[in-house]
Length: 108
View 1 (cartoon, helix red, strand yellow):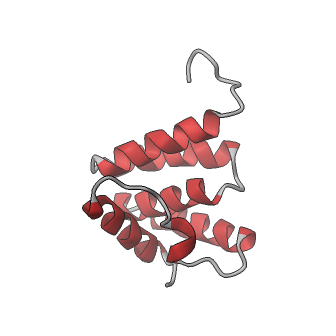
View 2 (spheres, helix red, strand yellow; view 1 turned 120 degrees about the vertical axis):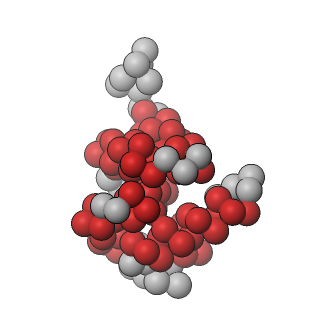
View 3 (cartoon, rainbow, N blue to C red; view 1 turned 60 degrees about the vertical axis):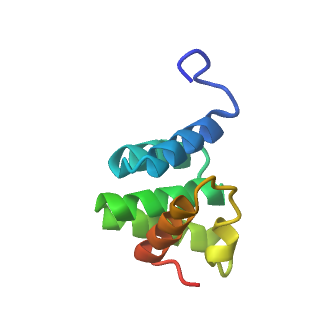
């Protein structure tokens, strides 16, 4: 990312970093990466999903709710199924991600 800061895939790299931090249980770091990703790709549901879940666990309720609100503007009726089609290696990471989305205010 430092070698190519204008790379068109930068937001995808930042989102991947957010998911890695999230799966490691480092929610503050995950939230920071996710916020960077959503600044670059403000209309990518996956980036908004990890932003919401990680912010909720990091205790950043306003950021989590903001990500969910942005998601609602993009997807008419977003639910967990929209954001959980991700191939997590560990079931506990998927469960934690879903829990974070619920904490952020996303309904089934």
